[in-house]
Image (cartoon, rainbow over all chains, first blue to last red; front, side, top):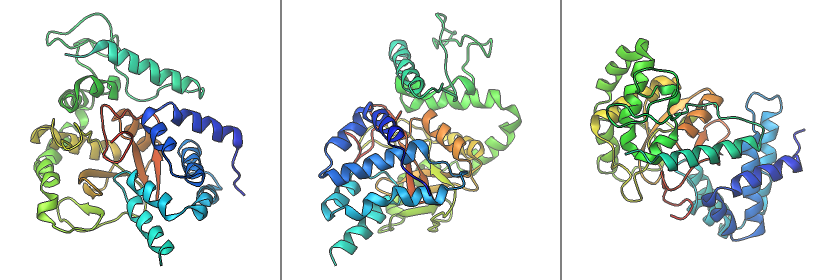
Length: 99
Length: 229
C-alpha cells in the first residue's frame, strides 16, 4: 500500500514554496484542509511514478484530503486551476456538496 | 537584446533548486560566453561553431529574456539540429499554417463550447483518457495571451512540438483561454518539455491530475487564475 513519506512531503512543499506564485496560492488557501490538499498535490508532482507498481494506489492516496474540502475550498481550487479539466472536476464537487 | 544577467540568474536559481534535490538540469540549456554572433546573439560555449543556438542549448531562460519571439530562434536551431525531421516539420507546418488563427477564433467559431480538449482541425470534442497534455504556448501577458507569435512561427512550433512529443494530433484545450495542446505518452519527456518551455503544468489524462512545475516562472508566462493573476 502506498504511504506518504513525511520527509519527502516536506521537501516537495519547500520546493514549491520557493516559487512565489505557488506560495501565494498556498498562503491564500481558505482553510487548513485546502492547504493539506495542496501539500498532497506537491507530493504527487514530485514523486508520482506512472511506471511504479503501486502507481494506482499512489493516486488514490493523493486524493485522500479531498474528502474534507468544503464548497469554499473547491471554489478556491477552481479559481486557481490551470487550463485543464480540473475546473470541471471542481464544479462537479461543488455540485455534489450543494445538493 | 538578450538580458544576459537575467538569464544567468535564472539558470543559477534553477540549478540551486535542482541541486537541493540532488539533481541537475537535463533539458536544453543555453550556455553563454562573452562573444556575440553577427546578429548580436550570444554564441554557445560548445555544440556548434556558427554561433547559432542548438535545440539542445535552448532553455526557457531564452524566453524569459526575450518573450515568445524567441520561438523563432528555437525553430531555426531545432531544424538545424534535426535535419532529418525538416521535411516532416515543414509538411506539418503547412498543414497547421492556420493554427494561430484557429486558436484565436475558437470562441467565435464554437460559441458556447464546453470546457474540453478539441481536435484542432475538426473541432470535435476529444477528451483524451491517456497520455499527458501540454503546450508550448507562453502567454505574452494577461489579456494578451496570443500576442508575440506570428502565424508562421506558430505553425512551425506546432509542427515541431507535435514531432518532439510524438503527439498523435494537434488539439485546442478550451479551458479558460483556448490554447494549442498536444498529447505525449512519455511522462519524462512531457515533464522535460514542460520545464523547457516554462509551462506551469501538464495534465495527466489517465489519472486526471495535474503535474505542477515548481520551476515555472510566472513573470514570463503569466496565467490567469494562477499566482498573482
